[in-house]
Image 1: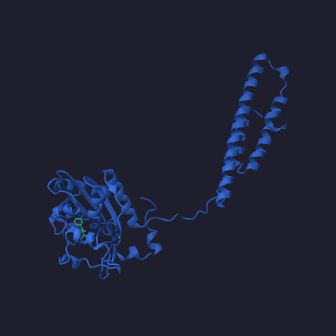
Image 2: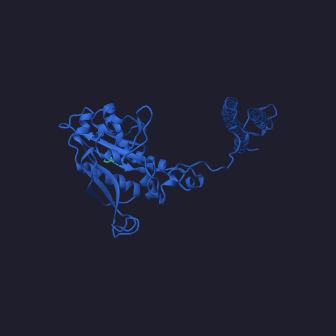
Image 3: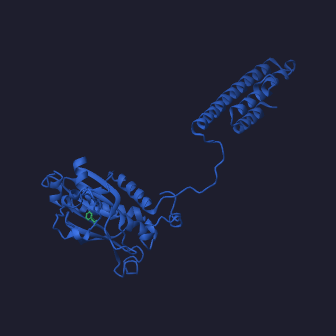
Amino acid sequence: MKMLKIKEQLTVDLSAAKTLEEVEQVRVRYLGRKGVITTLAKNTDFRTLSAEEKRSFGTKLNELKNFAEEALAEAKEKAAAVKHAQKATGLDLTLPGTGKKLGNLHPISLIQLELENIFQGMGFTVVPSPECELEFYNFDAVNIPADHPAREMQDTFWLKNGMLMRTHTSANQVRTMERLGVPLRAIFPGRCFRNEAVDPSHENTFYQCEGLVVDKDISVANLIAVMKTLLGEIFHREVTVRLRPGFFPFVEPGFELDLQCLICGGKGCSTCHGTGWIELIPCGLVHPRVLEYAGVDPKEYSGFAFGVGLTRLAMMKYGIPDIRLLNAGDIRFNEQFPAMV
Ligand code: PHE
């Protein structure tokens, strides 16, 4: 056999050798006393070769031996690692896969990961936030005192220990300022709860993603720029937005940010109820009192906040007609979404 052929065949044999024993068999086949490489030298009739040819043959033979030794050592190491892993885990990693489909992410998770990605690209920190809250952070700290009518719109589940299931991610605004200090740029996505009569567009459990930016000289222009960037990335096109006045006790001024309907381009269709606009993101400049609750001086700092309805956004992006499908845990529903973002 020619040396090049031997090299090739050795590589093929080694890639098929999975266990230490099999690697050893290959070693014997090539480098053993009667091995292919060993006999190559023996079977060559040196008398027929010139001095030059002898030298060249010797060099090549040495190269081949070195190659074989290195390749064998590498294969041996690999086989030993597999054996070790097998011992440690009880799993045979060399077995072929079962061909079963991998699981996929829930549409809410997909949209959440997408948002986290987009905001991280804009320098935001993703902050974890508790679902079970103190009344103070959920209501008082965001300027909703006990006698405020907004409390009635956000009835929730109260726990025996006096805490509650948060009604919105805004509950984490003051916590975040306390923890991270200002200036800051953060989002906190998560699950929220309200005591709702359940129908195709209302659930007692839903997801929001709050955003909070506090710095010097923050204005509505910054808010609009961030919102337009976000929506452009989510819907993969330039979007048109408008702000309408909206009331939330923790922002001043407060807005409803509407998205020009992407289905009809603003002409009016059934998705936008004939108006050409879709109400999408409540937002506004952080109320001075909220900053004060967090120990931040409103004369020095200002900020904006927004609350993206993740559930709503997922329904729009994936065309999900009934909110109840999202929490039903039906695998046939979940399997219809992409496996990864
Ligand atoms: N927390 C509000 C809600 O749940 C939304 C919101 C967030 C409004 C931030 C303004 C600013 O309805």
